[in-house]
Image (tube, rainbow, N blue to C red; front, side):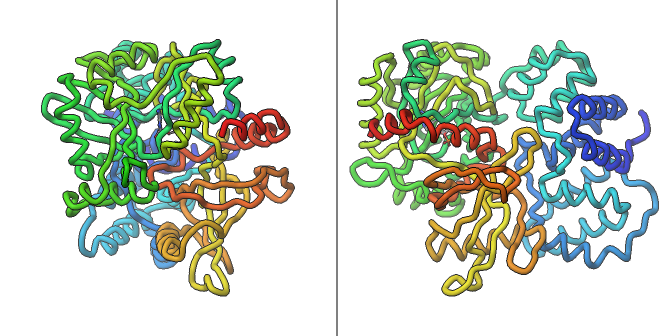
Length: 536
Ligand code: AMP
């Protein structure tokens, strides 16, 4: 076997990638680097390059906050002692050790492992290692660019590489197979039970007329539930349930496991849906109550009585050995119906009649749900992709934004991080760009809890502001999007207020600058705004 690749080569590549903004140059640099790697290095190297310590589908986390890193850096700077060059595989092993440290005194143990690692790095290596630890490499390599690099290195068509990435949910694993096994292996890739798949996402739409026009007439409209998305994997008697962020949540949902055992009649299948917490008269409870169910690991039994859940299924992706993502929506729905029975399915109509859709939207809102999902009848299922095959239609406009930093409060809010910097995602560079600040929307206990969480993920701090890792996503309402010369994003939100803390979402779910631009333009189409109001 070849010699291991040093981490300094990785750092040099990162530096070169950071310096160029030319797509083709980036692609060439990535491709050359990939071709030099050993098989066992491909997955970790690619994962690091997209700014993550572990592949996305891996639930291991480092749990090392910015504050810890700060402390370590302060102490270990003088002690740097480079004996032999650190390799990419060494770094991977160190990360695994950090993630393994759990339980009592784990914080100290994690700190010591990272200290050991940082005592072996040069200043350039330290720069990029710290960025991986903080979850953002800032070199302008988003997953899409990485896939292009893999395609360039292997001459395998980009569509096949993208499809496999959707199915495997691991760009590192796609790179390993493409580079070491080849095209045929990629062509055979299907869904595997108990390996979670990234959910398909929807674009926002305001205008039902446009949705119908875009779909060329008849369209499926389903209730859009304000709950948590889950995928249920069933293999014989064994059931595993995964969240939208691909975490295994089976233990928190024994009632749903039971339901799937008895009501899902297929032997081997993967079905998808939304769970909603239910209060009196079967009406949905606020999202926070639902999240209490998901966080609960102990005494799950009493919680299932206190906060009962209702399951609404809306898709099927695998049935008795067959991957269904290329099967059109209408056929998938009919298979779902045969597999589960209509009582578990989301409420739905298929129509091209605007009045009917408006009435259906009204009934969804009246029943306490969020709005509608419009789905193209012939659409395939594109895991992890937000596209125009599904549209979400919500009467009130919200954005999912990242808390990128927070300022200390004053007056009644003294001691709390209470003014939040809200950022959207630049889909080209992966950067998070600010759209404004808000101190509105949270209750006192939520401010306290948010302060604790933000301090845990602190990267740096100046007089008033604490900068944090890209982790916490909040749903934000606003009155207007304005052009702004102050922010690099070019936009600012007027009267932004937090409506929910979205712990079920992660940084990749954050709304994009592209969407902000579209929303900004839409504001001038009074017609669509009026239509929206009329829908209620
Ligand atoms: P959003 O969270 O605003 O991006 O909207 C997309 C989310 O709506 C999905 O991830 C699901 O969790 C949820 N959802 C609720 N009802 C449906 C439905 N009928 N079909 C698909 N997704 C739904």
